[in-house]
Length: 467
Length: 126
Image (cartoon, rainbow over all chains, first blue to last red; front, side, top):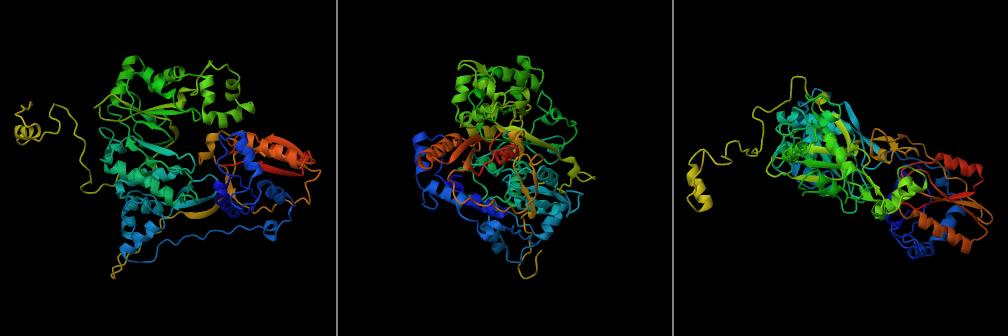
């Protein structure tokens, strides 16, 4: 293990009751020349300043300590349901200083507020929803419906949002899986609940103009912090992190303006089911323009280890794809797979492929083994199946553009089991941010009263306003 | 709940420890499964004592097991060469763990025991 992760692995070994002996070469190892690596081997362990190989020989030959012969696991205590009562400003400080927030202001989860949130579902407060952890191997943390309600309160959610937040919790997927490579996530809601809770699927769906999109996306991260035990540098090891971690690209698919089948229906759900679909990846290119040929060209430039792509397309792009002759999303994806091939030489030049896929190729694992034998100019398709490519429709038809991501779809979770039987619990006057103005008749955004006067002010000229 | 003295009681937002830990994937698993809660192997832990140590490596067989992290093949080859230069009477066997860095390889561990391995060095991670 390299020195950069010395503390992490030693703590992990202790927690697991397996006190392994480590020697730590410097970091990084990936991409280093043989001369540098020889220097690591001949040199000192940066943690102990002792010669690395002497330390390793010593680790194999020095007698075991009593702790190594008889290791134990120290169980973490369960937390009390309530914190000690305190003034609001002290409690807020406690949340911030303990790392239980995302750094933005939160609503304190008082018992009354949590009880109010619980009216957003019929499920019992003490029902276990799932287990979560941002790492793959440490101790998983369990949470109840009530814990999820506390998170929803903190995020600023209303009871109407709670079923979606519970479905996210039920996925058991953290929004910030720990990796030095800095994952980002995306979540897409389909079905009737989008309208019922006022989600934005249209103009500016990915920008901060909608309460539901904002608080639901944020809640996923707050639960990842508190249920997933995210602590920077301790469990969360992303070198620079990902700005998507704040909100996880939360939006609804624009089913109404899409000419294609909704995403959740593609995944086997009924059109009238409400579903949240989760995606994971690293890269987001926010400017894409042109036909399917251009989409294929753009993804051929992506690092291909993950081999997955998700396009978020404006409804106009979906219509353009249909006009190109693709009857379904899958038709378009199939064509893109077949037309985004790259020369084998180009593929193997990628650092990820050279570092990871090359090892699999050596073991004879396909398709890497066959690809490794190809001449440099032979074309290969890093995305091997239309299933490796997703298309989600969002936006307000102000520009026929698409966003390219290397996101893979990880899971779709039904929201309906978390809805109250009597319907979504809405406030008497549901809280809504201003909806995007949708132009139907050439009057976009122009008030009914004295329109000519406002037009004059804006333009500085006498501009006729057509009705 | 407001207590009348300006104090509030609020819920502790943290998840509860379960005693359930994740484990390595099987060698044949899809590498993507490591991040899928439904496919992650997990269970209650039991403490594991370290194997008894050798008194010396002289004349012993030491396996160098490459874990699959980028750069680990080259690093372990340098370790092998170090033994050749500094401790030539140690017999070194280089092996690559099957699957990826996320997978376990019990078949290899069995093979090493059957072949009379005296010690193993796994590397390099991270």
